[in-house]
Image (cartoon, helix red, strand yellow):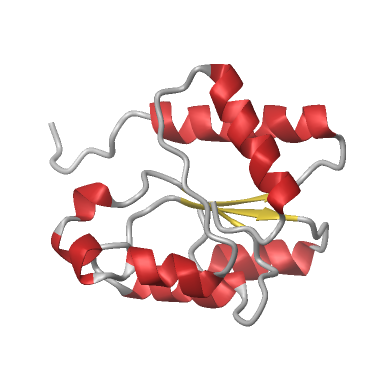
Length: 138
């Protein structure tokens, strides 16, 4: 999760813990820290260590989430990572820009904590339990 809000991060972490999903949870408070990890030589040489899903807040300090998304889509080792924009903005133009930049989905964070945790849980379950993409026709 790339999000500057400790409250959002704790709600997401608690939601995943409560759901008993088998997944590690990582947090970066800004795009620069996410880039250090996602574009490190180790991550490039060992793509299996990359996250299986990224929840990305579009409005980050110093560097916008969309800029990070563009970078993720430009690199071979991160191009296929599912990236869900997890935003506070209801603006349809933001959602459109995110999808055009390669986001897999654009979700608006609910204000209510219970709804927020449910949305995180549903999103992660959907993306972690989705069958893998076929690489060859049958």
